[in-house]
Image 1: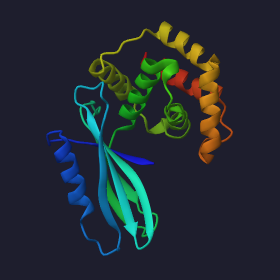
Image 2: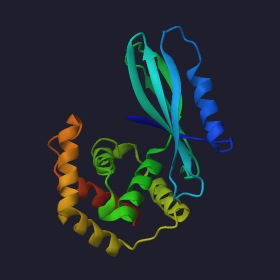
Image 3: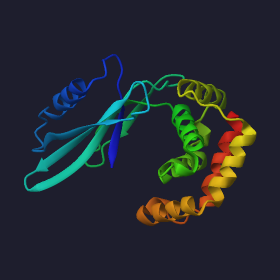
Image 4: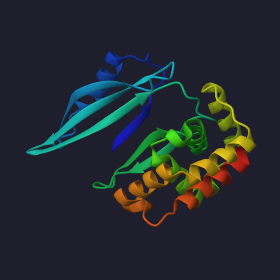
Length: 212
């Protein structure tokens, strides 16, 4: 639905964000796809660094498609960004890119689950923590994860004891609105079908047993 980017070594500003997106989008690679920036909105209003969501319209002959690019900065990446090779689905081309460390991804999502509690409308946070625990646990350095969680919470000025965290998770698990959101999410995306909300909460508890 969107792509998230972390901006480094460039000042964060709306004009800068749009300029960078246009500069990249206007590169001609002879595929007849054209990109136009149609809207820019602020995101992360509660963050001192903030960010922007850039809506882009892609055109290929008579085919139209809109998507957004979210650009933000500020959150620490522990220990640092990682090199990753992405394989293009259509061409098979291998593209080297920089990505968040898995430890920072898990840390940020754990903090979000705890800080937002039952008002968190993003069931995807729960799914991501579940699937990362299930499929990528072996790629996570536990010592680094602990450091990443501490850094993330320090940056976001958030603290919660282990006892309070598990009390909150029990409240979330039994909350009917959260259960309904999860059921709707699983019904809308095929990859989450068949995963019970209790399973997702269980994975989060296992992550928290490590970091708290």
